[in-house]
Amino acid sequence: MNFEGDHEEYLFPVDDGLFADTFSEESVYRFGSEEVKISQVFSANLGVAAPVWDAALCLCRHLEQQSLDLRGKRVIELGAGTGIVGILAARLGAEVTLTDLPYAVPQLEKNVLANVPPAGWPSAAPTVAPLSWGLDQTQFPVDWDLVLGADIVYLADTYPLLMDTLAHLCQDGATLYLSSKMRGEHGTPGFYADILPQRFNSQLVSCDPAQNINLYRATLRRGG
Image 1 (spheres, rainbow, N blue to C red):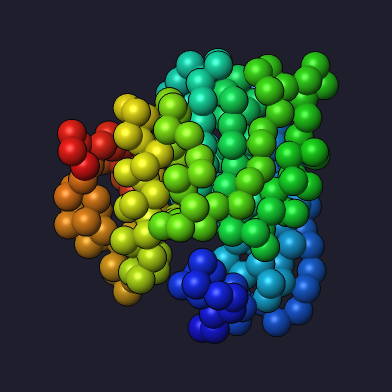
Image 2: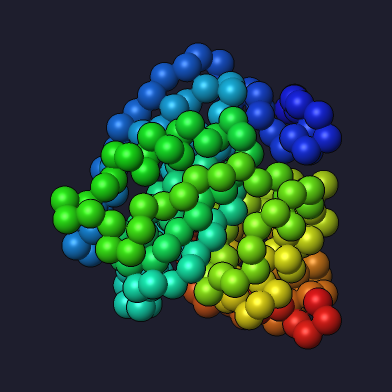
């Protein structure tokens, strides 16, 4: 696994050997009455930001099946990758900001443009912005209703940066939803058992043993 860039990027995998050749794939995902078109550009430059991961689909299904009222809610997604989770939230009425490292921004922008509803976005078109955990989260506001992340807990060196970012974004009472493949080799179970509870009250919302995916809901502790 190789790392590129200066301090704000070197902890995050870019050229991780997943894709030696560059190719793209267009896919359509349906969640209830909503249809989301996603372009995935598989390349060494995008690495883990390229695919739609199963944990993202799990979070999408939760947003749709639980009939959460997202109309007018302020939502920010971390490590958005293809943007499928945030785009669905926007189609369900939320005001969404999609964030990831700078190299993933063009893919996010392309997918937002491909998913404009025929009648227009219910609240507002999703905003796309670069965000480097632990470094520039303070440039973002704190008045979110929901903070979302799908399969962003996989690299132990980034966990302190992620925690600082989550604490900033959730300090005004936001509810955090994290969907993760529980990869023991990456310390993902330990993050939820030992690290997240240090600053957040968290609970397991759902568990998919077949795919080894857990969905957690959390809120920041006082003084967290």
